[in-house]
Length: 366
Image 1 (cartoon, helix red, strand yellow):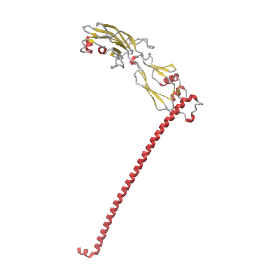
Image 2 (spheres, helix red, strand yellow):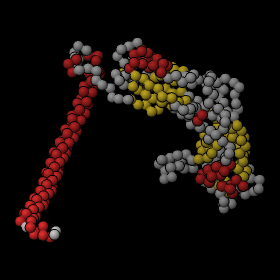
Image 3 (cartoon, one colour):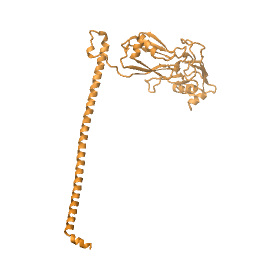
Image 4 (cartoon, helix red, strand yellow):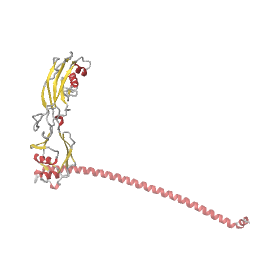
């Protein structure tokens, strides 16, 4: 949890005019003092940071050029205060109202502590308010308001069970420091509580688990009631208040859905009526996994069918290709054989001619 800054809202009263050179509204703004009444917070106590705020003609002219020193309404007052409070650990704004066209509460303005000081405290105070313009624009003195510390958190407890193979993880941080991740599984539950079933039945059980698991330094754990557990970083080790202080549990997650621990044949409500919760959980788990399994089988069957179609098409394509290759090789072989036969016939014819005309050929060489 976190804690908001201190503030105070005012109802505008005006218009107010800064017509003379000495006209002004002034007050002392004090922020971020320690609260001496905070339990566990020891002295010395800081008295906060003090600022003297002056609203004069120069301030009005800087905020409202051309207004001739007149603050007409709460919009103007907010603009003037924004100039006057610059660099003074505070700022001006409006009161939110979702039901109005511009989402502001009519005729209302607010001064906020912006928590920008280096001090640990969180407070807001206006004192010594004076005016020479016949009014205060709605401003009033404000007695000191202390912001509470927020380095604590209350957890609402309901009994629960950590099932086998299930781990509950969460991030934990204090005062905006880097978070640490913690985990609770069935082994931890049974080890801390001395049980075997994974049940966390009482706030005292949860208290023991948190003390064992969350190792952040200086934390204190308290059982507030059967349904409440408080985690606190005490003021003795952490003086921060307001925006400077917070405790957060985030990123809560479970690694897997728990597997049912019971089979159908083990369900016996008459013999074990106290196990109805376990039975219901187991049946839900079975139905969920049956549905998931059917969906998975359907997807696998479709995938196998697609693969079968692909293989059939591939085999057909390969057979056709082999047939084309065989046909091509046979044509080449046939053409080659025919060429060899032609060469053989020509050779034989040449030899026959030579034998028949041997005398004529011999006459040529004489």
